[in-house]
Every structure is written in C-alpha cells, then in structure tokens.
Amino acid sequence: MTSSEATRAGATAGRRPIVTWSLMSLAVAVVALMPDWTGSGDARPLWIFAVPVVLGFIGAAFAVRASHPWWAVVSALWGFALIQVLVVMVTLISGP
Image (tube, rainbow, N blue to C red):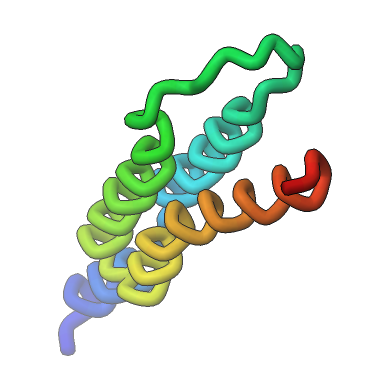
C-alpha cells in the first residue's frame, strides 16, 4: 500500500456521519413539536408522522455514502422508534 492509498483509507475511516447525526436530531425536534402543547385540540395532519421516518431514511443514505453501515441501520430505525416513543409518552402523560 502506498502512502496516498493509506491516506485515503484513513480519511474514509475517520469521517464521521455528522449529516446523519444532524438529521437524527432534527427528527427528535420534529417529534417534540408533534404533541398539542397548547391544548387546542386541533388534530395534526397525518403526513407529519412520516417526517421522522423520512429523516431517518435520508440520514441512513448519508451514512451509507460515508461508509458507516451501522449508523445507517441506527438512523433508519431511529424514525420508527421516535414515533413509538411519542405514542407511549402521550399515552402515559395524557392517559388513554
């Protein structure tokens, strides 16, 4: 292996999936804004529940592109898990 190949291999391995982490954080922010904090009783549109899942898949695509397969799996599952956590938390706080 030449020094240029070693440099490229080290640069690829050392890259962090910052875009993936940012999209996962954005998904958390979207889920935090979903509950009706004002108590107005207005229903949220149904498509808003797909936003964290879509952000998770986009983050997974960026992780795959950066050669981080485990972060891709975590990001893809993150959106689904956030929706489930939201359902459980709203049920526990507001009651059935």
